[in-house]
Length: 184
Image (tube, rainbow, N blue to C red; front, side, top):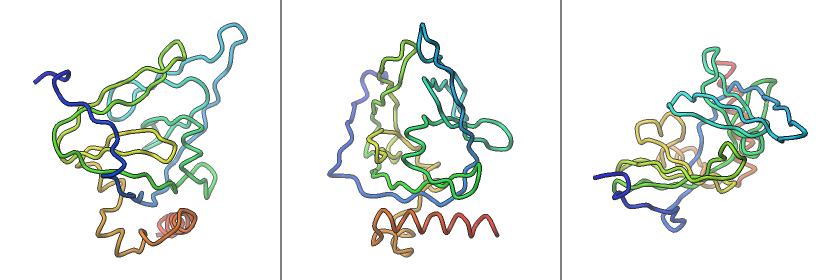
């Protein structure tokens, strides 16, 4: 079956539930990009750890793992979803909503192109992969095998009482937990 024959799905809010990020400190540095008077933003290309190319127009955060840039995130999106409890280190405090794909499918995400306009990018998901919508509206995918490293499972989140927390309570809890983990 070709990618074009695989059914495309749009984010279905009725299937989604909150998912809670693990409160892991992330080392990230703000990369300030010059703006040229005649052409505007200069594109920056990086190769993220999952392959392919990420393109940024304007300022972005470079997420650093083992001394190298693992991936990037646009400044506005990063700051909307993370808090910086200590210089150079961030913890995700935003709570996305998500659900697992019930079949092989495609999702479409929006990516800025070289001209500064938005283009669509298609990603094929396997059954069991996660379809995620961040609080700012960005739709992403997470492979099933990667999910437990990034987010708590529903049972664990329930045991921790995360479903009963408000957004601000979760943010405070995540910051405190990240500080505890950095001490251990």
